[in-house]
Image (cartoon, rainbow, N blue to C red; front, side, top):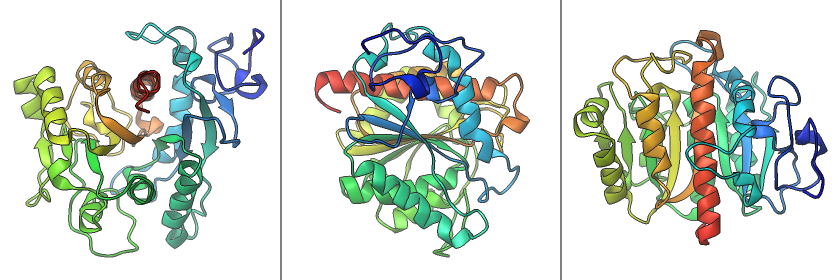
Length: 321
């Protein structure tokens, strides 16, 4: 960026790098004030939203999640992120692509629309950071990522729910069965996959390596990080973070809250230490702002997403992006 821009960098910035000077309470609400653009060449990471909540089994409202995460990111665009101490956008070219369009009144077209949305972005060579929406969106995203990077992928899944309940209906929309389908379809390798924070029961966890919430609490964050790295190794891994992995005390604004979850501090430390993994795609899902208190859930989601971008910045500098 050759000049200092005061306000609305999301629509006024000419290049993809650098930051603008913004009033946190004003301006165009792209994620961390990145350029709103569908011009993909040159982008390292593309942020987009998928405002879907037609797959929910309890409280709807996650369709407003992408909007809420963008709004909660304004303070993150003001200073260098903690604890990183750098501006990731000095080195990492990131755009906000806006939201995936789908016809909500024609449900059978939704999954193909999301797949095509992801294919378009991935064909540019950029990585994706996607905001839900309910967790079903990860299934079509995995289809597109497995096409791009080869299947099966490893899956690193933060959640209160295992989302591996049986579902053999190919056209169903259900945010609790995506990873059953992903394993059955060969999209992910359960032996190389880790689920963190689980605190709901399933008679068959599909062979996933489960580090449930009590395990994390009993063994600690450092042991959790070590186990994640041991299982996944250098496999291409898709990182999905359902915000209900956090305890409702830290993330009340979600569709299916479950007590006993991770704290924000635990989750942030884990994510901040995943830089050794070969991360090929990322999402943050299930923020439902209608149930939020003082935006704490959206703020937690925005911070997790920012940390994911900081991981990508470091990987770019290391030549491993």
